[in-house]
Length: 285
Image 1 (cartoon, rainbow, N blue to C red):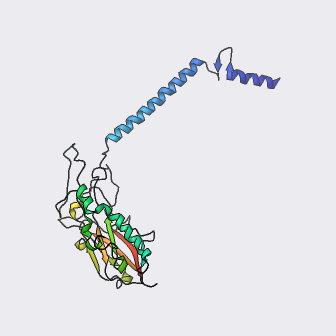
Image 2 (cartoon, rainbow, N blue to C red):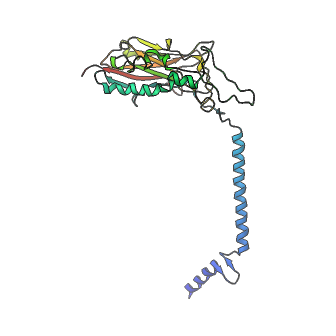
Image 3 (cartoon, helix red, strand yellow):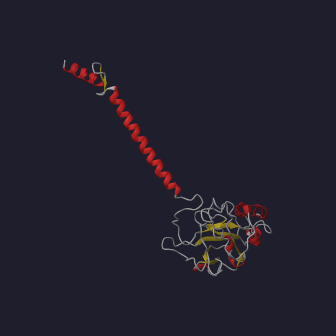
């Protein structure tokens, strides 16, 4: 009997036919609760949307409001070294070095003179190419300066489609990471790249050739205004050709950027502004 009484109480709690209550509330009571939560959540959604709208009004589509970047840009080499930063090949094994030549071909294809002439502007060298906005009037899209692969001369892949790899005089290409608004160098002095062997390999690296001359990044390619504002921007490059490096031995090399307003190394990143890699050219079967 006690169990029957408990079942009856539960049934009456779920649905009471006398008071027409469902789970202890009438239809009007449930309606008022649902209406309250509906209005409450609509208010929260509206408040969130308003907050997002106000925040978005403070942002610029073409330039980040805040930039948490190192004062020294990073450097990258091509062809892509593997995770161990090694370029190793055998002159007598075409397959071992042809992949490097093909990688450089793919990388340099956007720098073909014909492509650059169509997309980019012929700028005045040795001075910044500034394109400032006029108050609230945005000067977008901004023009970009031509960087033709012929500037790289013997490392352009035009006169030597194998970039010197087949004769043990390989080329590597260096670029700086993009930093919006950066003005490298001051007083008209352009930043430049230098490469050298690590201390234990100083007698192995031999003579180097830089393209453009002196390994400079011309000032006309700066400042960079961002991917949206400067759609056709072509990063300047520096090529380094190793003319008589010691073969059949590991040569540990470091290349770094030099500028009178860019510090090398950083407490947060000791490799900022420099890149290290190993180059080994084998001639044995």
